[in-house]
View 1 (cartoon, rainbow, N blue to C red):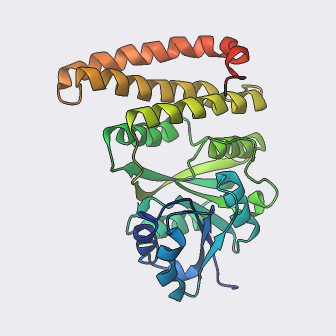
View 2: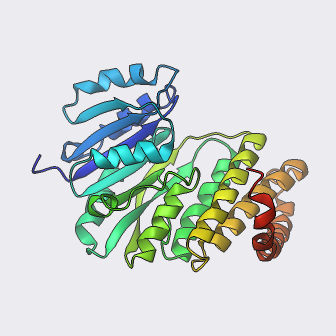
Length: 290
């Protein structure tokens, strides 16, 4: 495997509806033979592994089933069983753009050894909640000068990951935690338009459960690094802004009545900034709830 550039790691749990579409887009990529493709399954119950079987005809493809469906444990398994200089992480519910892998290969060859991570671009095609998330994610990367990434679409040097695995105690936002670890150790993250479409869907209650859980772990990450990085504040602003626009917009139907959009945006932005000043004081009271 001397000519292998890296490993593409896909974590799955009950993704039978998505994994086939994802793998078809993976194996359509130019130069895919330069990468090992690994699916790490978290003991799915819906026939996910059966969907992956036809793809075993590809010599660089393998599937591995674990007993745990914790994302950090699955990704750490992929790290410990990877080859090449880079590991690209994607979600099973994604569809890769035609130039996705070419973009990563170009950036891998261009960036210096100081660059440990590459953040790729993605959008969400499913509903208005996830579309808003992707609309804010990419401009947020540029505004923050790439101090975080999402394991929906990112690449990380294997040499770094061999010594710095995903933190299993961080049950949500573990990719943000790893990104801060990169910055904290004096390395850099670049961003590249390696585009894919994320097809994840949420109901309003499901979305609110997600942001509540991630908000709690953002507090834990902030505490871990002594709040010396602004991911804590930016993360709160980011999620509060999204959730409030969704909730208020749902009732005002702002996505059909565009005249309300600007006012709602300004109100929720102001509210999020105000809450950002209070949340550290509330942490001691809420940490035992979850």
